[in-house]
Length: 118
Image (spheres, one colour):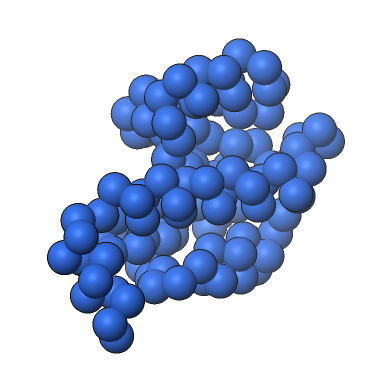
């Protein structure tokens, strides 16, 4: 998955924003001000996503192309190596979508309503 494809995927979810809050190379996608996807534009084949703790552990143990979240809480974040031959675009898209849904569901009711009323 290329950086452009990843951006199109992430920005396709409702209320998603993108910015460089940490430095000029770490592109961060957020919903309601909360991060769900990080990618280094100099190494776009490495993406970091939010995950349920028990699911993250299972994904890491059963997929060689998935590792604990780089520079993130290893319990809640995973890093995907999308350049791996066994990393399918469909599975990557699914994990990005799950990350978005997890973060969106964790937003307060007030924030969700504000987003939906725009």
